[in-house]
Length: 410
Image 1 (cartoon, rainbow, N blue to C red):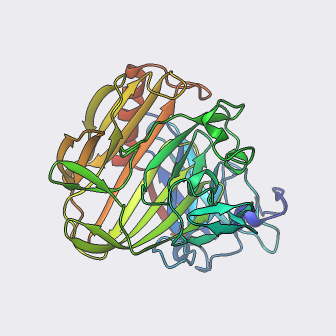
Image 2 (tube, rainbow, N blue to C red):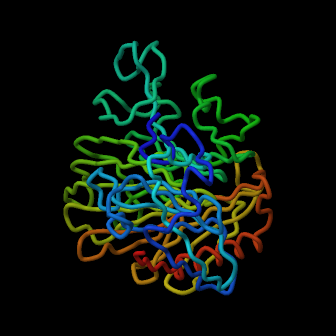
């Protein structure tokens, strides 16, 4: 399993003395929470060029004498890390200072893994028609989807890439369905590495870590990419080829980048780059989409359930479409939500299988939206529609008013 971060590649925790707690910072970060409410596990990114000598190495961060969790990340998609992602918890309206310090040859600190992404397929077997026979699973960094592969080929563990935070897990089917599913988690440690190892679809049954909690079927599941065609949402079903890779796998954020070549949609073809990322302490998956050709009516949505109460809300720059009810496969409380920029909205609609949000990409054929799930059986889980609405309103405020960061050299 790859861990392309300075923090998670380290072998030792640094001591205060070894990490230069009393040394003069090479840079200082002024960080402000603009909200009148606390922000727990708030992430922010600082370009490496603004820290110290601008090199992406030899730096760690402290706040009030304590190590600040961080990892290095790629901000422009060229597969080369160029920034630091840090995480703080701040009180309402709090303004504080984070010091960037030179490691001076000491080992960088390590931090607990609070996110994970993985992709696992079988090796040492063989294809027979469109099924992969025998073999064993191996985790890989990337995969070109074989031409033989389809749904229930038994080739990819839990049928596609998976990603998780300490609160929730997700997967999407890396085949013609390309729909997103939800793993409800009962505990905060990383669990995906064990899912589907004791039977191909064992995750449909309750276990000590949790279970698959969503019935996707022919719907958009939760947050799946689609386009709106006349009266229905069309998922990314027909393509020339597909590749997927683990772009980040760090303690604070993990990301999956999938490239769909030649997606046939609305009587035209376009290539798609899809990036799905999740941060520690968050239920939200961020979905960044880039098209090679204009496709004005992208769509996403939520599976229709008879027991789900439909909800809408907006605050600041964002709005949500959500459902909550006893709609999990465990017949208990599950909240599902799409969060989108208000300015991107074309319409809210529905088809036979899904509640649908139709969105307009920007002038560069880019679109970003978010989706999340909250299961009743999580630690301190959300157990009512009103509590889910309160949680969603908080997420809109955090997206509209992120932490403000100012970097100064010393």
